Length: 175
Ligand code: SF4
Image (cartoon, rainbow, N blue to C red; front, side, top):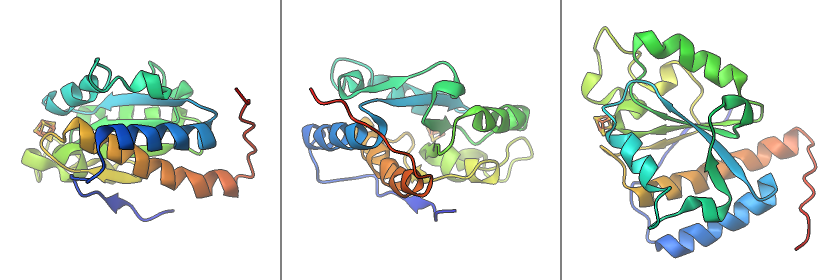
């Protein structure tokens, strides 16, 4: 299992530069599309709004081949927000198990990274890594959309060796 990576919330890349790198990496690794299942595991919705911002006209991640999907069975990545309440712990595990492998888990926000304001509370698991194997942490309360894009890029780096290990060949159709 790879060692989880704690991301710096800032990157010097402009949004356009990040978008170009993301698009190229998605094309190479995933045949031009990255499907994400967003899992709210008990957030205050602050992080969720930042994720929704990525779908708006400013960031418009769908132009890069990224889509938020309704089912984990269609997902390459779980984007988890919230510190994982006890009520949602079982659902979080079931969602992960339904995702095809090799899949990625990204913890978004301080709550998902380590429990945040609910750290130590009886009612949460205290962070996603206590329930699921996290590949990348994106800190912030909430993290900005720019940091989310950077996190997606770093997460895809984690997928590269797994695809190689699984001996999966991805044919990218030529335009
Ligand atoms: S990290 Fe901050 S914005 Fe995100 S769910 Fe926790 S309290 Fe809300």
